[in-house]
Length: 635
Image (cartoon, rainbow, N blue to C red; front, side):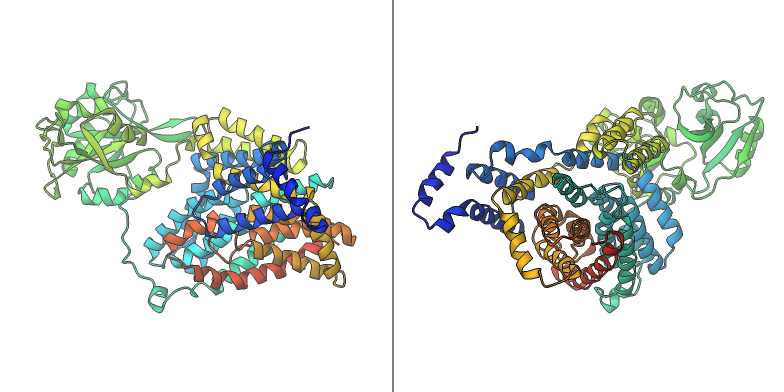
């Protein structure tokens, strides 16, 4: 038996002088006071929420309400492990480019129509958020929304709020989509009831998503002034690879040519052919077939040419000189479209680098430096005195201290350039690098791993946490993610917040608080039917969700809702499901969820904007919940 804390002994000695009813409930009063303090700190304190959660664990242990083992029991909860594993799964989808592919598809089909754009963003965010962290989804889609706003002239304020709402609704799409669902499921298990299945929540979520998309389309101009409603194209844009090609006057210099049988290039290396000195030709990359698909591989002086290779060339000579070069070397010209570099951005990149003042390379030519052999990159442009250097032999130009070089090659070599030498600094990466996935070649494996996890969860062959663990191990084994990034992907503050709030549910149950609240509600709601009780549960979750996170709200309300349903003789499942839906429908304030906090600055929103949009939407979602939940989960 664990020893009682000194504070608990002190409190016990004081209570002998108090009335019997206060003595009987002093532990419950202590829990309620700690809960009130926690809510106030969540609402007004500048402390991080995970710090507040740790403080509550400490306080609830010191007061003797819970033993240390009970207070720290959240660390051993399987759902905590499951949530951590889902962060890793989500990061794997990001690193393999699956999430970005979805973003690219949205941009492709949406065009410049604001209705289609909002619809696509919301559907994409909701779909992606059903299998990965909603916070991660918002992080992915914020730059997408900003890019769309810059490209179309649609004010970014019109796009960020629908993105936020869709990310919250995504928590209603599958059981593992958000932590509150798992908290509710855990409470069902704790009450010796059958847990929800993977898609139990999906029908209600689809109904809410339809209402949410319709609502956002109808209210898309509510937060805008008359000037903001009219599209404009004055917002600054970050330069892309196509902009660099234009600024350095490289248009017309790039060519594609295929090596035919009998070409003198076959079996020879780049340096062995002396292409620069003899022909003024720079080989930027080689398109080569690998395992039934074509890839663009980076090159250096030792790269050996093969028959059927397609060369990406940089040549500043005349068209006649280029045709002569092709004929002499038995090369066949290939079409090079203007968007080629943008399409190949995942395999070849460009960036501007500058010489550092202390560099020893000033006064030397690129040939003397052996730039490509040393750094595995090709210099295709030099910026000097506010203009590009125009010459037929760039590699004989002597570098000056103020020069900026435009380099081309694979992204890893560009990123290593700054760390491998004290001569250069990378000035800026083009916007295209934002879409680069470091493990894009493993995307098929990531999809297979994800399908395995979902199949295991849906069929119930193994517990959900084991299914997620299997998927994580497969992600690592197939190199979709490495251990370093796996650990970095876990959002520890979220886990600590959940762990810190779990003891309150246990403490309320241990001190009789849940039974007391349920008994009070039973008396006051006994004359109403199940629909009114369902409405009350929804409103209770929404009210508490104004001040604390949806996860903490689920931890507090789920046991009360289940206990109340059992006392009324109703099925506990519609009430548990309503808690899951209501806690995700926290639209009214920007402070109770990182999803909403993330869009405040880029969207330029105020507190009142969330109230204006959130209040009507909350009541609409409540109506959908009350209408659909009893259909799929009868009383």
